[in-house]
Image 1 (cartoon, helix red, strand yellow):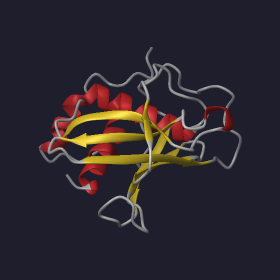
Image 2 (cartoon, rainbow, N blue to C red):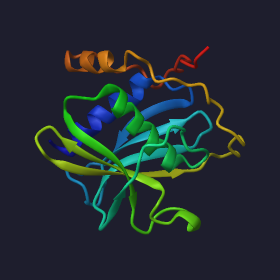
Image 3 (cartoon, rainbow, N blue to C red):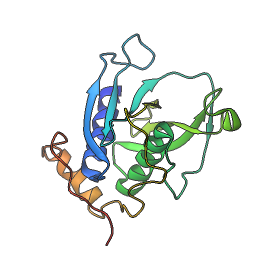
Image 4 (tube, rainbow, N blue to C red):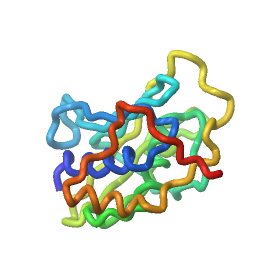
Length: 184
């Protein structure tokens, strides 16, 4: 499986999840494989103006992590990695044999170096293994002190939406506001 195909699945899941803090999702980079000069990835722009990125990378060492029940806040790189793993757990796309949240050697805050969730190891159905590194850029204004959407629930229909992708349906328009799916 090619990097672009892995990113297609990730982009679709992020769009179909309908998280209210996500304002836009797009692609960037031109490299067909991880490790080149123009890394290909998925960019998520949040309502706050912050951005998070998942992109094809090569890293010398990674450490498997359990997927936490709570989304990290406010660390956007950690948050996008955990959120994406939770979406993969919910949708279980047939294109992938497995995935694992990982920490990357030497990355993370000083008190959690090599222990923070900074990537996702994806194993495709054909056996191809790719690392998606998570990075982020800050918001132009301070982020709220607490997660503004603690009640968000991944839609139960996420796997059905993923199947519609295979049938040729287009992902939700991520330039338009996303309807709230916060649990009531």
